[in-house]
Image (cartoon, rainbow, N blue to C red; front, side, top):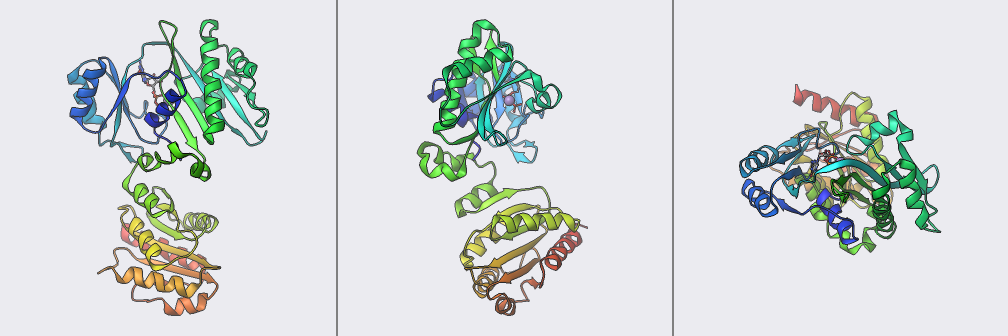
Length: 381
Ligand code: GDP
Ligand code: MN
């Protein structure tokens, strides 16, 4: 689960990291009111899960109510790299003299978390990593021993952070490591950490990814999940308990099992199509689950055709087939052509049961995917 900037900032602030005064708003009036309350200048920042919002036009610094209104009108409802902006963070603008980068992630090669610090913050850190990797200081942490106090200072000094703010930055880094460890994070990042005229250190941005499989033991964070969805499709899919990722193509994909769904995505690409989503309905494929999955995929305007790829293990093919029939019979007209491929336990029985007035049935995965791609191409032509 990826937290929104404002959610991550609240988590960081709760642990003692300084953040600017801020308020959330979803309407133009709300932005203007919040800005007046906080005091100008403020930054108006789109809350969507994309990096580089600044460059993409999702952040604006404003100095008056009129400017706040114009920025709110422009940013609320805008499309930012495929995400509609519904909420903005209105935040006291920070006057800064330096922008630093601090981050913690899992270094899978080393099998350890790694602290990263750079004085080249604010900009695209991936570009810094690619072009001047030496500008990012890295210090590995033994997850069993935990972070030893000198390690945070070591990372900060190696990066060349100015002496007078080094201990504050090291203390932010230590706090972030505690959060990383205690809150089951897979990634934590502040880019930029702003150093103000008064040599204060402030988190101006915040990224936090939490391991989904640890949410059961992360009470305070799990509750943020519903709010962390960035569009209605993700929200609905989350409520149904599906693993769902929206992509930008037009072939809707439903399968049971992450590997099977990934394979289907690859094959859609292989046959010249573009996947509209990843949707794993998980184990069991009772009518209601199938209907819920179709609900999500049909609701996506980008989807022109749908392919089901179901492998029966414990889930029996005939049960799945009944589920698909029942789910589709609820529609007066099937909104988008559906192709089904069944394999595994009772697959033959399942294929016989499937109502071919409602779906097209293919015996092999390749044929099913190719058919779905053809269907999508016909619609989009
Ligand atoms: P990102 O583009 O999605 O990473 O969003 P950030 O929150 O990192 O903002 C991008 C850039 O906008 C920062 O590096 C700053 O240069 C600028 N910015 C954001 N907030 C403020 C602020 O409060 N004051 C000033 N002066 N600039 C800001
Ligand atoms: Mn940033």
